[in-house]
Image (tube, rainbow, N blue to C red; front, side):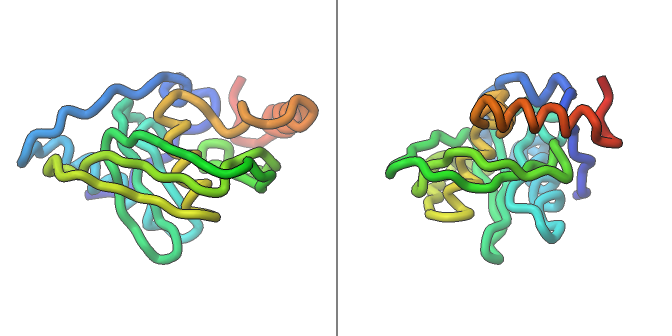
Length: 166
């Protein structure tokens, strides 16, 4: 369908918990959302896009990791291992990367647009993307998981960004 504009930090949709999607076979709205998510994540340098980031308050995200592009609806996240410090950024907080704790392994289960079961799992960037995008669906931005001093630095930097609107 189309690449959608990414909503930026400060947009209320990013702080709202997304609603579950009722998946009905052949649902044109769900298929259009999936196509928009895929088209939007396909831009080089993007590892994931959650529906709230394109202004849609539904539980869906797309991913683009190691050349694999796909999506999941109504994901449920499981994590394991000892959390590790990783640098992380976000399309909704453009131009910034900050260190935060993430689990080294993640799995999501959900469904596709036809209601068939989907399972995604991985380590490294895939684990980070699954956690990051699921957080978006829960109304959380990655900066909320930063250590307090790092978060203060992040907020100062974000407030001085050209794109930031108070």
